[in-house]
Image 1 (cartoon, helix red, strand yellow):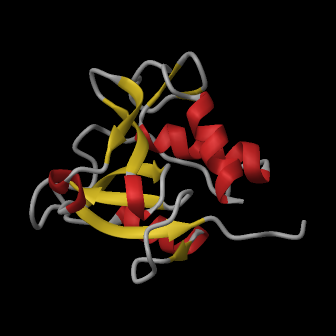
Image 2 (tube, helix red, strand yellow):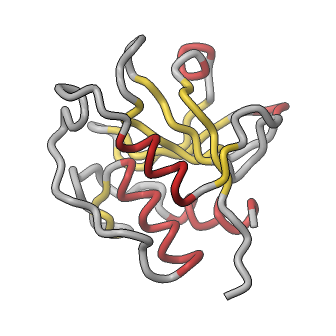
Length: 145
């Protein structure tokens, strides 16, 4: 499944950044990118996403993104890096996890695909500054349905 999700994510590269959107080629944010991948892999999204602001979860300190990832994906934070893993980031130390991307290469050439404000969907090196921001890693779950 990892090659499948990486291929889906790469098809989104070049999609403009648009807060709360999730339409390939039209606009998305980082969560919208993951939602688009999810729809292509599984069909309907697992839950409705309420409207959110750019500073969502910060005032309350609520780990909404991390909690949702635990509900719908498999935590692989202690496993080796592998293409197809969903990576959650803390953009500042001790802040809530609120950015995410999809690992696109394995250990030897770490890169990730993400929607980044001002850049749209891009594939970036998982450089040391990005790696130190990782809060958790998850994998899509194989389903029989």
